[in-house]
Length: 469
Image: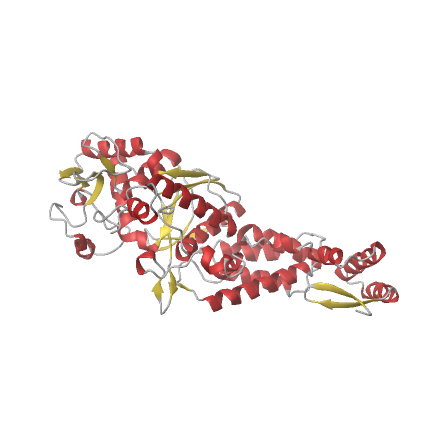
């Protein structure tokens, strides 16, 4: 079945056609590790996880590269302001290197709590300075750069179709770029490739270069590392919608100017997570929440946030509130109970159901529809083993750890310390119910009752209590 993805480059859903048959190369813009990733950041990483899982479900061999920005991202998201790593160092009273290591580990832990697949390659900007310098050299040799008092800049006037990704009039992009008011820029949209260290202060992170001691511009790392680690398999580039007009636009300009080749074929962008009256969650707005303070400390299953993200298409804004998150947890727990009630006999899910599911996820990652198909199957007349088989198959994409619910019936029985003969009768009755042998199930119920137990069938499966309890 064909896979269609919405390509920001062309503003439409397009059939996915990888550069090399059966293989996919993906670059996903990773975190700037000067602080914790917030839930808005993690919503973007979740959509990327849904993408990777969908590609794998379609039998593609996926190579995913994610950068770790540990230098060069300035507080203005452009070319002005303090380096966010230096800012984090001053805030916490420890080195920028220690700050980067700590928040990198914290980000990876959050990914684990949200059951995201680990990228094949994590690459840190500070580990790839040589490659970034070489890329600037290429651009310099081809006449795309100029020097100012604070660094080496890319001349956007020399790159045709600079607004190709944003689809905004060039004047509008120029107007947006004027907020930084750097009088040495030839054009408002020009951006730094290499920043010089300040003469009156010693930076913690700086390197020698042909142009002077300094550090790479934020946009440079993604170009250098995607070219290095993906080579010619540059199929899909992902990020948040806030990256479209500046960061990703600049990546395309400098990469294609240097190589003379198309950078990536497909550009996918996730919408914001909004909070408090429709404002996007952002560190700059000081309205952000993390996995630790929004989920773990409130004793909410982190997968409830994943479940909530599945209910909103990645290109639509998602609203956050603690109440909506608790409702999502209730919905997830209800799903777990339904899975637990299916028993432990895993059968083959119906091919028609799988085709429906595949059609949903292949329609630009329509996860809300995919969830709806799962619930339709759970309510259907399909045999219980087939339902369970389909649910576990779908969970390869959904990533809700549904397998954890399979053994809940057996675990419940063990916690009640039931005698072995009662456990055997319960297992036999569960099997009879799965096979819809209701007469046998009633006979086994009677035997269990004779042994002094009360049995009820509920959403969590067979519930057993001692009669005198």
